[in-house]
Length: 375
Image (cartoon, rainbow, N blue to C red):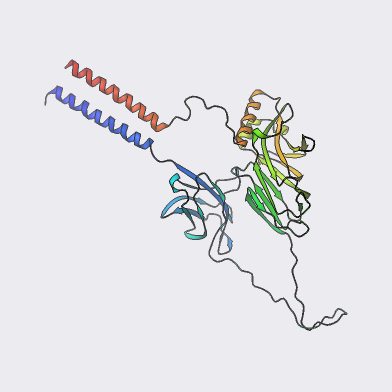
């Protein structure tokens, strides 16, 4: 083979390899995207809390789409996005509606779920048999010795409802177990879906709706930032919460909390200026509520006696950087668009790689053309 033919062959092989790389990168860039469905909740094995280190696996069909290892006995994941990771089930959009089966240390859980792209679900999982209390005899024979008449048939003891020490945590809306007088029988916490807000109602609280009847349910959600009543001049709202039903009252007070991410907390800077306010529809004004700031958990809590629209606010007359950061936090909390993304960000890396390979291929082609012309 002549030297010129050998050079031509080398150039040809190089071009074939480069175009092969371009095609491969383009195919990678067109891969079908996956979407997460997040899960968290309690987990029991044979009626007892699952120990830390328990592995929970999520399957659709015969394929595993996510797993998590518990770090706390009796629960997996976290109700708050700031307190730990959740079980992420990542599948494609065309798999929406398929059934998710959960395995707890290899044993199939009783509960299943439907895959919902970008969904967040609180789901308690259990495997094995539950512990069933053994019924006790309600009667006793014999006579009463308390200075009264005897009873031949015995008496049946009917237990009275007592508050449960266990706290139930739910997202969005939760039903309240109350007595006929409105006393809450089980401590209950309900959170927003994004984890920014929560309200805790202790057992023993007297909870009534606007008409004075026992409160049957409570709800909490992130408020639409754009539709909030006008805030006082010089005030910026970081997070706004709608607590319902509007007009519900509590005696004693219940705990309302706002939670920020580490980045949001650091960007605010002087967190001592944070305060909690609520909107009074009768006066058309925002009223301040005494609040406590906890840097360790990045939360601001307030004791409230009724439901309304509540907001985490701070003075806007601060350094420009701080004011800008809080504005971004407020937009994010309400789900409104944030500032425009700088040019160049969000570019697909696979597409960028394809572009580089195309340029390289063209450069080789030009060199090949010049070599052919010179020979």
